[in-house]
Length: 232
Image (cartoon, rainbow, N blue to C red):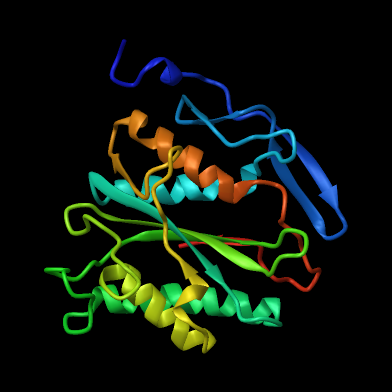
């Protein structure tokens, strides 16, 4: 078997999809359970209850392409953000955008970057998706891709890059550290992946993991121009 494995026989077609129309617009849902990128088919989290939105997953792939053009090895992880009760959606969206802006400033800083970073991080990629299931608060699923030569772990709620995320989010929301949920390893997923340039196999886990963020269920438009998802 090749290093890429049987999942990665090179394909020529694009990812098949159907277009769904709703009150405030339309979006593309992948037909089937694979996402085709650069000729390789990657398994995704399609279920009977929810398909995977191509319009959300494709920008993630584009951002990973971009960061891999800069760094040959990338540290990829996820985290979730929650809002204080009764926070308006436009406020929540603004806070998430501000979080990544402030995090970028901190990672690039010569003096204020997280302890443990030997030198500033000049480039990283990220994305977020807003979601609300029935009877649940609005929350945000986020992903981040960083240079592996500088980052070996995300950190804890009080240290490293994770500590900076928690501190910034608490400052923006006025809430507690519990509003940030850091990744935990499970039987199905680790809490991070290492992606390597020109090694499609190393994208298999990340695409399966991040495709959960792109599930159709829980995404809704307000009609007020508030974004459901965004990337760096």
